[in-house]
Length: 143
Image 1 (spheres, rainbow, N blue to C red):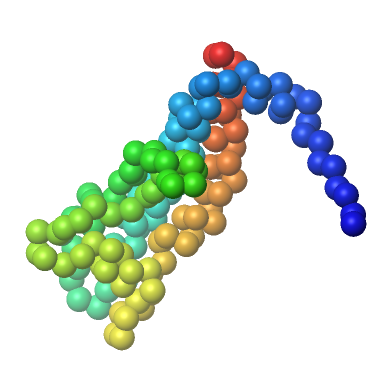
Image 2: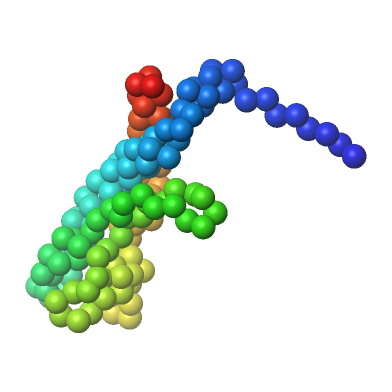
C-alpha cells in the first residue's frame, strides 16, 4: 500500500490556526468578497445583452436586471458555506426570471443565444479568487 504525506505550507497553517472560533465569520466575509466580484461582472454582462441585436424594438422591462442579486451565506447539511448569485422570483407578468435568463443565455427557436453567465464566470474567476484571498488575509490580520 502506498502512503502519501501532504504538508501544508507553514504560513498557511499559522494563518489557519489564528482563526480558531472565527472560522464561520471569516468564511462568510471571504465568500461575500468573491461574490461581489462575480455579481458585478454578471450584472454588466446582462445589461449589455438585454435588448441588443433584436430585429424588433426591445420589450425589456428591466425586471430581469433588477431581480439579479446575491443570497446571504448559508451552510448546507455537510457544513459547507454557500453563496449564490441569481434571480429573485416571481415576476409581475407571471413568467419566471430563471426561464427568461435561460432563454437569453442559450437562445430559442428564432432567437439567438446571448450568453452572459458563462462568460462572466470565466472572466471573473481569477479576480474572484484574488479578492477572496485578500479578504482572507485581511481578516486573519485583524485577529
